[in-house]
Amino acid sequence: MPSFRVSLGPALLAGALAVAPAAADDVHDQHQHARPEKLGTVSFPTSCAPAVQARFVRAVALLHSFWYEEAEKAFGEVAAADPSCAIAQWGVAMSLYHPIWSPPTAAELKRGQDAVAKARAAAAKTERERDYVAAIEAFFKDADTVDHRPRAVAYERAMERLAERYPDDREASIFYALVLVGTASPADKTYANQKKAGAILNRVLPAQPDHPGVAHYLIHSFDYPELAELALPAARSYSKIAESSPHALHMPSHIFVRLGLWDDAIRSNVDSAAAARAHCDKTHPGATSFDELHAVDYLTYAYLQEGRDADALRMVERVRQVDKLDNAQFAAAYALAAVPARYALERGRWAEAASLEVAPASFPWASFPYAEAITHFARAIGAARSGDITRARQAVERLAALRQAAIDAKIGYWPEQIEIQRRAAAGWLARAEGRNDEALDLLKQAADLEATTDKHPVTPGAVLPARELRADLLMDLGRPAEALAEYEASLKVAPKRRYALAGAARAADAAGQGEKAKALKASLKAGS
Image (cartoon, rainbow, N blue to C red; front, side, top):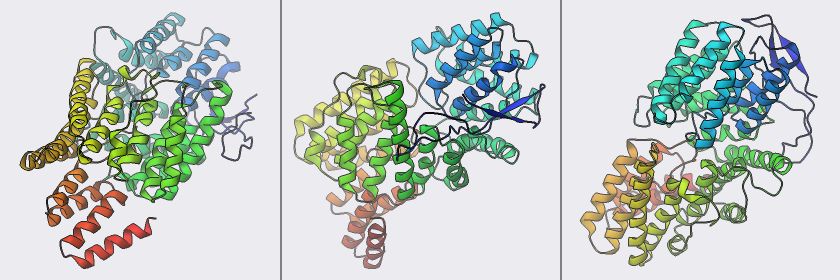
């Protein structure tokens, strides 16, 4: 039975509880040794029965590490044990809104609305708890008639008011920081929301250095090329703060990948995949964890950057074994498509890329057009570069259809990403058909459009960046100096990428820049 220690930090009610190491039978490390449960230190006083306080705080800790399924269960157990604990139903609703991930499904929205209604009916005993319930209600209210983004912004504003009203309530500030990152515009290269969130979290950090949400959300706040160095301390600490969470073990790799720290990224994701697999074996026997697949995608990417093709192939084989999932959600969809596509494209195996299939057939791909698009992007590039013009044209047409499907489904962000892929693929199709000026123009459009946005947290990086594809085309056309500039521009965004380093070295050689070519080859060798 979990045990907790009392924290006498700034409390708004009589007591504040903090999650401490507790006995647990889950196995979360790659050596399969049982460890005490460790989820970090959280303080969230409530008016609920003393007997459920410890379980409530544990549920909040789960929430901060995006262990949403377990958090929903834990909050539900608190509500069952103390039906008057209205804030427990707030927790259930919070478990069903994932600000950094994809929007809730219709079923999740319904469960969230039901939880809010139950919280209202339970009549929270304190104004603070009623304000928390009202804040999450702002997101779930009118979900049948109002699109996702306006409701997310309404929740952001409600959390801003909550944080201002209760300046000593650090949980309010921490959750506000998260939603700021979640509502940030991908096109805002000033990173205004993210910097604001980081400032909030850094103010909380000295008082709560072991808080899982502080470390976690700092990583998300600074998961951008220009900001990544700022999150390195959080990346080094988060996996230790909440080492029982598969997601906490994985999250540091977001920053390690940004900085080209491949060995660190590999260690993070080996640990995360093992923890996710162990937990899934207990909770969903026979299924594959989406958390494991997410880690496997990051592993594939990191292995390829070190030239460890055999290890990357093991990840492809792992993905091909997937038959049943614990949760057929967006991270699983992305990884299932991205892993084999990366393996073929980053190694320049064009015929292999052209032959990729959307798999497994049993997966609900229609719900994730942006994930299916990855396979058709790889097919288009591979086919165009291996002389199969008919297949390339079909894949480009499918990309256009998938973009429209994403628009029709009112999916944010991803239609533009599919359009980047479509233009890049159309550019290489034009090259295959001898329309070189059009090819250059299409690939410039793709690269320029890609530069106006940033990668989604679900991915370690573009399956093959448009700017690198344009550099390849320039090399193909005998323009190595221009190609070199494009490869180097890509390396500024994604340091130490093997494909870009190798391309830049070839371009420098061809452009007569021997010293630069030598330095690039040394960097390439050092990364192996």
